[in-house]
Image 1 (cartoon, rainbow, N blue to C red):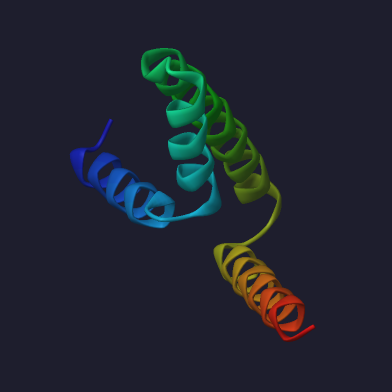
Image 2: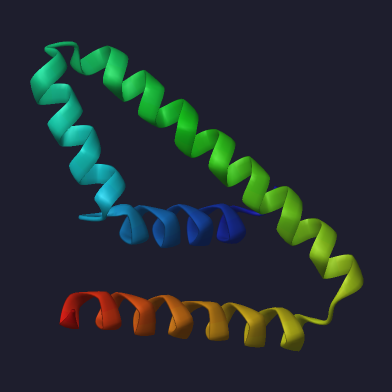
Length: 91
């Protein structure tokens, strides 16, 4: 395991998760359930499973597609999500 890859993944995911809907849902659930440690454990396990699926999918796709194709697909996906969110906000 390379420390630079580990740190890069940590920083990227940590920053991406700050203030997103998942974090807000976790805050609301922890406040309403009065069981913050159960909410923390459930949310942490969900994030671990989601990250494991993403890492496995990324590893598999990297054997089939070039890095340029993966970068392009990721960029298009993010642009598409951004356009969809802007469209939803305007209606």
